[in-house]
Image (cartoon, rainbow, N blue to C red; front, side):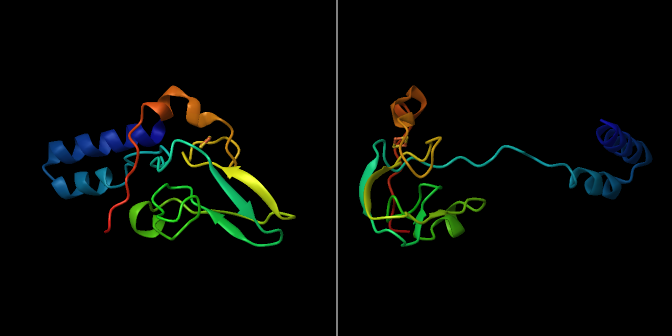
Length: 129
Ligand code: FES
């Protein structure tokens, strides 16, 4: 609160003194958003995958990968702030990995894809770019 008051006072002072460069320096320190980024939805169903025990996998968290459900590095260009979820299964297994990217038990499907916010959301269609 004190920081906000200080910034407002600084802005007011610069306006009254006719020094816009002070106002600009004060405004640049304000964060525009503290909300975490949200993934796009490449699939509204889980993906059945056979995993090899002891092998390292990278599950895509941003939704932009063209190798769903795994990461292809697309987050570096299209979704900075995201990073893949890395995991190593203990043994060979067949699992259902989340395709909607909104599971609460990543990387596994927990049924969240059946919720209205996923069902009604647009499906992300990858492009060639
Ligand atoms: S596909 Fe994401 S929770 Fe099922």
